[in-house]
Structure formats: C-alpha cells, structure tokens
Image (cartoon, rainbow, N blue to C red; front, side, top):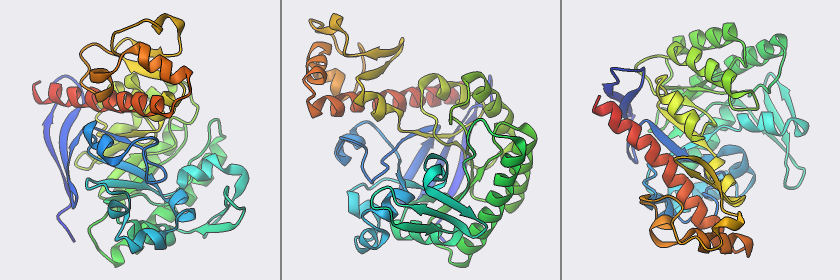
Length: 357
C-alpha cells in the first residue's frame, strides 16, 4: 500500500484548530482545506485549468451519479477519474449515502444495501457496502467513503438509532472488504447519529475502534438551524481520533468554516459556491452580495477589492451584472471562480494563522 498518511504540523495555541498535511498518491493536501464539489466529474461551468487556478488542492465527485452516467466501466477504461476529467490532484468520492437522504422517495433500504430507482431512466440500481468500494476503485479516487444512511432532520431518536445500527454494519463490512485488497486509496469512516449527542458518541466510539484512516461527520447541514449545527460540531469533533483527518461533509459557508476549523476540523466540501453563483450570489468579507441589484449597473469596482481571483482581477461588477441579467453562461463561470477562490483562500489564511500562532 502507498504511503498514505496524515501529519499534524502545528496546533493553535488559542483554539482546537490545527494545520496538517494529508499525503496521497496524487500529491499533498495542506489542511484545513475546502474541497470544491464536482458531482458529475465536473465543477459546474469550470474547466480543470480554471479549478487549478483557484488553488484547489482536492475536489469531490459522486459515486451514485457517476455509476449511473457514464458508468464505472467507462471511467475505468480511462484508468480512472483523473485521466477521464484531466485532473492531476487528489480526488475524494462520496459513497451515495447522501442520495439515500436526498432521493428518499426513490430508494429502498435493506440490510444488504440500498436499491435506488434511477432519476435518469427509472432503472433500479443496488448499492452494497462492497459494490460501493468496487465502484470507487474503478474511479481511482484517492479517498473513498463507505455506504451509509444520512438521517434527515428532524428525525426521532428511534429511527436515528436504527439508521445508525445499519450504517455501522455497512461500514464494518466495507472496511473488511477494503482490507482484502489493499491499494493506494484511503477509506474514511462516516460518523452519524443525527442530532442526538448520545448517538454521536456511540458512533464515534464504535468507528474509532475500527481504526479507519480518516473520520467524517455525516448527517449535518441537512436543514438543522445554525446554532444546533454548531453545537453538534463542537460536541462531535473532540470525539474523533486526534491523529486522523477530521472532515465535516457538506459544509461550505464562510462562517461555518471558520467556526469548524476552530473546533479542530480539517476538511470541508459543499456545492454552495457554484450553486449560489448560478443564482447571482457571491461571497464577500461583508457577507453575500447579489450581483442582480440595480445599484451595480454602473459599478466599475471588482466583486471584492484586493481579491486575487481571475474574476476580480479582470472584470467589474457592472460587467458581471450585465452577464447575469443577459443570462450569459459566462456569468456562472466567473461568479463560480470567485466563490471557490474566496472559500479556498479563507481557509488558507486560517491555516497561516495557525502556523503563525
């Protein structure tokens, strides 16, 4: 097996934040890190070169969507996702567990796995703990996630416990299967438990005993109010093994990132930067800005003064507003570049603060 490892370079003297390095076969990842989401092996509206220019170190792709289209056999014929999409840095693939949550009307859960009705053509597709590992091996991702159940919010403690028991069984099965054929891909655990701290503790304790290479907090940022989200992150982060990467799945708003980094979280991902861009919303140090507003019609300033992204270096708010109002595709590209760059460099600055603390 390749030398996959995580090292903690520096711990903050003020908070639980830490700066680290994850070593993968496709290069080093300096943490904390924000990971843009490319569900279909594509960060929406951006080329691999444009993503690279935002300083992205690692991106995500989704196992469920890629299994349906184009299919793991097509991707495997290219030698994996890196060649297929022309991306030479690390890739993390999700397992489809989020689709258990988001496609709740189109799936059936059994002890063996999950059967989905394809949202494309209605055909049935079954994911099991081992088949999800096989799919991700075909994809050649650097970090894989096991099949799990992302419990919705709100949910009763009884149902959350039932989901948790099933998730633990699947994760143990996935880990055992992964260990049968060691390769150069990491498998992370996913801690679940909904909004119940006792179940979060139970999940973290059980999965820590299994000694996965990394640990994620799943089932968060699924509709719960921000104070509860922060309470659960602050409670759960210390439960995860200190010497392993800590990852909160689906988190990607600026204030959420700052809070979570200070709790000791190392990794984040979210579709928010590109999704908000498609609706004309951009991140600024003063909060969200809506480029659609009339007041930007004559504005010659960049989105954010001093921002180093391609968009702010080359285009005015006036031009960006024009593109968006005219429904030009370029608007999504330029606003997405800014939003992704903004989050990546927000986290990068926090890393520098940790190193200098």
